[in-house]
Length: 272
Length: 303
Image 1 (cartoon, each protein chain N blue to C red):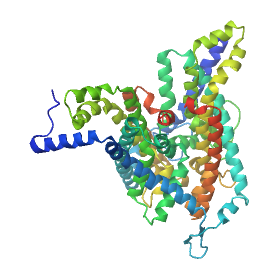
Image 2: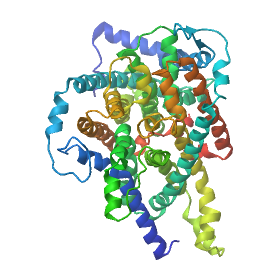
Image 3: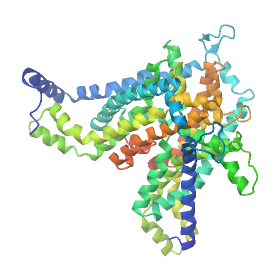
Image 4: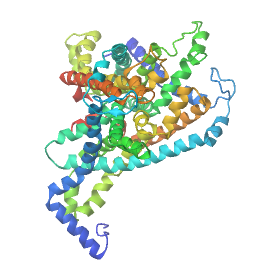
């Protein structure tokens, strides 16, 4: 319906928005190669020096290690709990079924600070010391819904007759699960796991409230920016984090055809 | 056939017997699959929310710094003492302005994606919108410090254009810009979803009935896009209400304080968990009201 002039304006608008979305990210990546330790534009000389400085920094190393451990553990737990919830909600009719989907979405529907503060109050109340375990508990809580969304979306698109056919051919419940259900779910599980890991690896708000004295990588970054220290290293670490979250998400998008990565896919959860 | 490749002998029989037993008892299967995730949410998450609400009624002993369990309304009363009402007002205003800016930026973009772009371009734009959403949140906030700071990228650009230095680093304007940037994808996606679902025939019918483009936009497209806009606004509004990273990194203290970073400061420096819990009730109440209003507008169908 739009005329030529409208089209030109729309195209310019889209280009403008894309620049708005990507210039900041590009800026930070470029600054990772800045030789100067005081950041100012334009950059005078480029170097890879800060990459080796960041790599040799024991604080960065231990923060990275902690983030990887927390991400791996939260991903495994979220994978088990999220797919179990998806199976249960998809397969059975029971009282309070709609409420289940709502509760699972709450940790990402409410502002992260609420989830973080609630968990912090809980740990304080129970006298639980903040540690890697409490970080994992926090991450798992908000990662479950990502796996759940991916798995339940796949279950809805898969016909139940495949499982029935398998049973008719004499397979028992375990065999049907192992040789029929699991293969149809494989890519949904993988993409759910990748997204959960990306979400956990980059998370800072809930982690701030559930981490003790130890730093995850985002907490280290947050602290360094706040104090204005080691900023050249921050540029490098942040570039690394961008890569490590975008790559799994890109793979997950390929596996699910794009639908699975809308971080805010509340709808699929809310339909129950 | 690989179907028979299950474990051998006795264990094979046991597996078969167990699955048969489970098959005959659907309620048992349902309980076994659902209890672990539900237990996690009941025992950890919902319990945490309740403990947080209870904590809001406690106080901190000023001498020992210990938590005193009890039923005191002191923390809720403190919400009405300066500067907290100003901070709540600033946060809500900020959330509203960010939401408006994101709507203005997102609607034409989403319109182009949904109704003008070729399928290939549409997919590319979809990925282009989603990737920043996942690319490290801290990195994107930090990028704006580098851009907005004195002698930053923006200063350089405006000076070359002969506009002088904008000097908006560490102000409310800077926070508004950063929030608008960070949450933009959360607005584009649901608006796109709503616009994409409008059948072409609606627009043709509008034209056949003599409506010009502006009239079609106002009377057909925008009303049908509204649920998507409301859905997006839930995210932009809620995320701004609870954020503490941006006020902490982009803001500069007392003139830029928001609910999120006051809660954060009460966990760290001030060490007053009960007051933080009481303050956290404010965004919960605001979002509950917001969600009820959104449901009345039919936003949940559009997410």
